[in-house]
Amino acid sequence: MIVVLDVFTLVPQEILLERPRVISTKVGHAWDLPDNTFGAAYARFMGSRNFSPDDRPPVRFMETEELAYVAMCAREMLLPMCLMSVLGGTARFSDKQRSLFYQHYFPWALKAGARSTDLMCVYYEKHFHKDLEDVRRKWGIIPAPPPPRPNATIVAPL
Image (tube, rainbow, N blue to C red; front, side):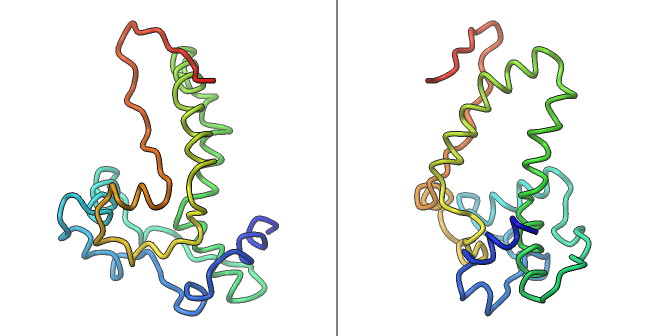
């Protein structure tokens, strides 16, 4: 609830007034966009994981419609899942996987998270037609580094 309240104060008025949703009827056109666009990248990502934006259950137990909408936005962006994946997911890794994660991907994630725009406040659908690289630059998104070559020494950046 505290996270939702903090985020609620940051969500732009336009988003709260229009209440856009990341659901199939609103973003289905992303499949038809040119390959270099943000929308096409979204569609490829969702399709490669066989995931539909309509699979999420409705938000319940919120005191106001505004809080329920903000909680739903957070769910659509998978914020709670990302945090839980980092905290609990690494427990299932092998020692080699855990080492790769903490030495290679975790430093990137910290840097990328510190540099990027607050993505909770982005009206995603209005950017689907834009070039993916332009969107990444505008929002300060650093793509994940490729996995290191086999037998390469992993050195964590300082």
